[in-house]
Image 1: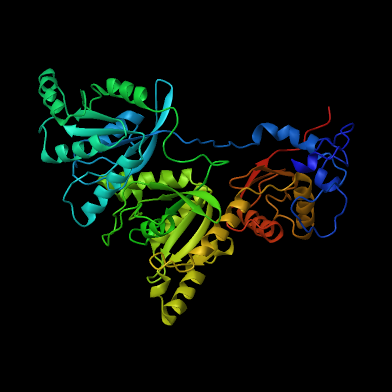
Image 2: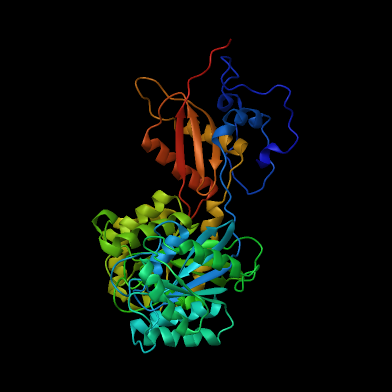
Length: 507
């Protein structure tokens, strides 16, 4: 910690558990003036907080998440040939949404895979159809983009129906591309079917690999071929210094998440349609904004509670929850033209429980008239007043691009708070002043004494209070409010944990 690197003497460290008048560091610290915190300020009250904190070192720390740009394998083919089932088989878990209905996968979605020590990204795509229109045409365009940007393409065909006109068309397109192509014939469940799969030599894509994605038959041979074909360096994505910060777009269906992502990217990255629930899987994109590269993730709209969902909607809800957990900052989108709903509040609770930085974007602001603004202010006071004391609010229009430039400053401020660490000395001196002015409530006839405090982790900022007794939830909320008043933390949740530890007796 920064306050511990200033060359303080450690000859006589303070033992907070010694039964002496100097045993409690909060009591022994000198009376402070009102604390005014300034980032990076060198501050020292003479107490060896490093020695005190070392007792709790095993409880502190956080993990750094590293990422690198990996080569991409795109899984393409006609609708309902088993592409998502094959993706799940390759990555070894059920990530891609699978249901026995054509067209469940609509966007291109990436998952990390590992085979024989080689890591790569697998990109699931929607079904490719030559003459598709409307929503299906948008889905086909996503598959075409995947074909053009991947390092290896795996064309999946259905071995139970043989070569179709659609297979021939996509094979003709792939033969003209410079990207290596591997042909996988799925739903081959018997030795007889293996012989029948030989007809797929007719597509002119070299040797077909017969397999059953549902049962795992033949997938090992396919993976060996994929790993042998992968280039040493990924085609797409120039490496940037540091991993892009991860931003998740969440909200109820049809609130404009995909429209916002497309506006930021400048292309049809996510399929957009007036039908609610168009996005099923999380869709990630690298976006350059404000001179930085960000990884935006478009998620499925949360229609109802997960345990009340069914079919692919159930798995889409799980994927959205996982995307929130994997994000660093969440942009919660709320339709400003409609009343705030229970669904909006449930998503807020999900983000807060996950401990992610938060920006609330009221979308479709171009549809909000003066009367609706008055009603919205009343709804915010009634439903969101507690959240909006620390989460930034931005009024935008994804369709027109209104005020989108305000998103980056709000995101950066939220992430700065999410990463913020308060020096231990500063924190304990501040806490002593707060407790002196407003002590915690008595419990069981005894006044609990907070003897030491430290910020255990960042992301989100988590504070641990070591106390001689239980600290009421109301007092913890009071401390959180005072923390925000003094140190900021705008856009980030704060967690305060209490550990009851009685004073040790002198030996």
